[in-house]
Image 1 (cartoon, one colour):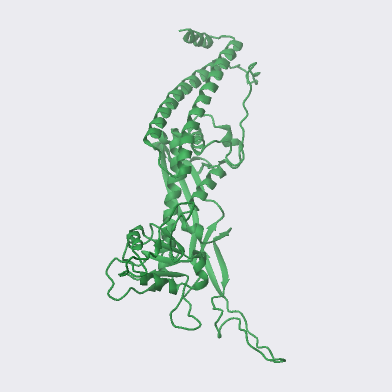
Image 2 (image 1 turned 30 degrees about the vertical axis):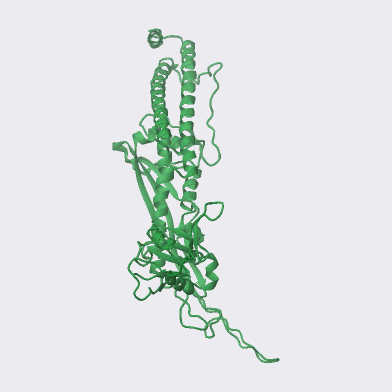
Length: 461
């Protein structure tokens, strides 16, 4: 009753110093409520970050704790909205008729927004998104961090052409996840360009080629040296575009930890999976040229009479013998997980007793994080074919595969205008990338007939 009476008196013309005194009380309480919300959000962020760091899902207990914290946040946000409305009403009632600047309230310090390096003053992606959402409401005041930082706020006009840009550091976080340890792109020869294509001169002649490229000769004393020249061909790589458009509801925007976890994990994981698939299976039209469609791929024949959906030790020996020897030290086996039971049963002599294993399972990070076959890591990849099809097991040296990207970051834009009438924000991720093998064809050995390559697959069986 006392607060209602004071508000009524203010509207009837309470002196301005009284309005400022009450506004100061409201402002202090608002500060305290906002600090409490920030602390609760930080607790949720810490739990999510801990789970992400360990690469595990949140436990049921943690999910229950997060729901409880979210309920507290929602309750305090309602308090904040109510108090902000009261403060705005008091400020309007007590404003001077003349547009003169009012002196600051004694004992209340003005808060200047801080722009921290890289994040534009925001602690998380979710906090940034909430500020963008609040600033898009007609008549609402705009968060000063969106105005003060050139790297945070971008205005391309009005209406549907405007938008806020995500701070730089958040884009980098996503980029690092794309190049995580289980990404095939991280194993490739990585190129960065400022344009949309790159032309590279390439020499595909072998050291023992006696007809093309630079030649060397055994000459006698005082003999005229025979001249030769390099044989170059141009390889042109043009960027493709990998995109994701993610509509996010207003409710999700208000849930900062949920949004932060979703956008910083789900979109990059999807892009990584798509890029992995393109590196292995891409057609080269509007997307990278994949290993399985490369002209330099060797497909080792299956054994005569070999049963369907099997992998035998002779298969492994044939594949290994077709891998170009200088590439072996960098080569990895890429397999579909369906192949693992077959690999675990491999032995030097299937009829001997006891059997001597060929495939050595992983023994943890302290030893080898991957299983090994012929001394090289065995990496399970979802993009590999199922057991029995070409591409279920491959031996590849991915340093011979070029990945080219535009700049260093995924481009990430956020707009409230595309679905404005539905209270839905649009998050757009664009990754300009392409890939192709450096090798245009297989190579013939100096002596012998079996061709060799940087990439070997096993034929269907």
